[in-house]
Length: 555
Image (cartoon, rainbow, N blue to C red):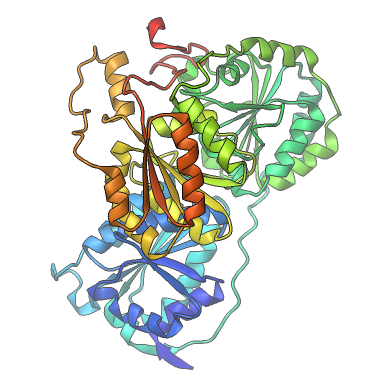
């Protein structure tokens, strides 16, 4: 069957089970959008306000569903606007396929209108990318892009398609979607036996779990391992939800802004088992002192992560579920009562008035009203760390946040993608006024699609996290971190036809949340907080993880 290249693209997307794409049209991708008109009952195209928002939406869709997210953009500025979203996905190992239009082949290299080498630009931030120079390769390239994106350690793939390739005709033969590749087994049974024996002999074992657990759909096995051997679990930012925060073995987030008990557990354990975690600098602090007294084992799918940041004693490379199953068969049922008591002694509860309008109480109120069944998308900054510390994530794929790249402006687009992938669930977007100014244009998408996304805006009129560092480490020299208080965010929301509420106490917040639910539409709840509110604990840069500062008075 001979069809146009643009139709080949869409038929291949259907093969892959794609029913939702995010994008923004333009000159060089117009043939694809023209063909999309005939597929509008099969593929739902979500028109965002900006190509970066489209890429973040595809990312949020992928994180929350486990499926490959898809984004479209035109050439030139359309393509370059996707770069931040692609890099965000790359750093967090998120499966995306981004399809960009390109100028016709005859104009390549002539500085044509809206020509840019997006293939070259994105090589460092994609798992793989394609430039389609021959229509005979188009279908195979698309199929291969999806296979690569979702196999092994997932990641983003870009396909750059010249306009004339989309307009040419070629034979198309349907093909079934390829299964993702099984990762090569690089560990031996002896390695499993050795690690199982380490676990059986350890007196103070600890699981250090990363985002790879969620990617591998291994959350239940992680919890089962922890329960059988009575091993506490510390989570990276990307792992939150892999084990319920309400589980007695969950110590919460580890790292620079992690819970004190989590960091001290790492410092005092005798066996540290890293599962799908990459020893990020935000977790380890000064690596010279990281888990000094522990034997370290690392379970990962990507051998490039072994000994990259921290030297480990026993690596196991391969399919995480297979490895965890092997361990579950070999380990003994244990109890570590003394270790549990020691960890409990690390906790230093901070008493705050129950009615004070501070982040801890704000999150408690939101959770009281909304419950556990919520997907939380955040931007990046103080509000992100408060969310990680205070929200009790109980299941995987409910914490949608930019970890590795730390992308301000990620949250609202990601919330849109998460909502499109989970139409029956409640999605909230937590942000700060600095981040929100970068992505509030996507309120138009929320309104146009009638998505019931509620934005919780922490408004303190400063770039909070940068200002906190200026306060703590730069002698309070507040350079360019004060935000002019010139935006009425309630009116902004209402201008888009959404709900808007301005609150500065817990009772008003509770009522605003209830009104947002009753309205059935999107909205913005502006929470006024004091700019003096900082994120604690904090491990100062260059310090060891056990050298945490609990409040500003300690500095």
